Image (cartoon, rainbow, N blue to C red):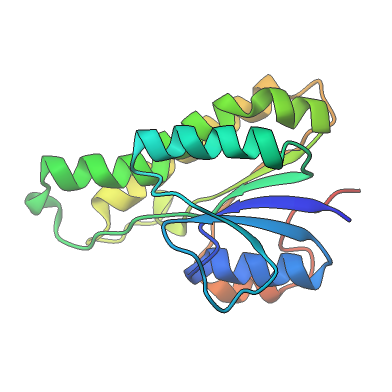
Length: 185
């Protein structure tokens, strides 16, 4: 059975991704701030990805209990909505921690396992990195940073069997389409 580690599995796009993976007979390890109580039999790790100490503890748990996996998916995200003239440092810092810093640290720390497992990496960003949404300045910029990082990881792994992809999603409906998720050959 294939195994996926999925960050952000309890709501939104992450929940849609989880359901698609389960429908494709993946074993899913879900990582989120809170456990999804209705998901019986699913391995879940509680982690607030904006908290460096929790991220480090989660990385240790993945290494100890889930070091064999086929795909690492980052679908967690923080969204704020206000005009660009209302940016606040603390909000910007939080959005970047969740949308950019956490996946960068997680994927960097697990890169050796990704290589050893010949696993894939999927980072979910947003159409807002190419289209203008007047209320999503912090969000779109943090997701653009993740897209650039994903490109760099892809380049780093170009001579391996690993595949690295950015998925720019608009809605959960995208994950009901055939072939929407990157799956192993």
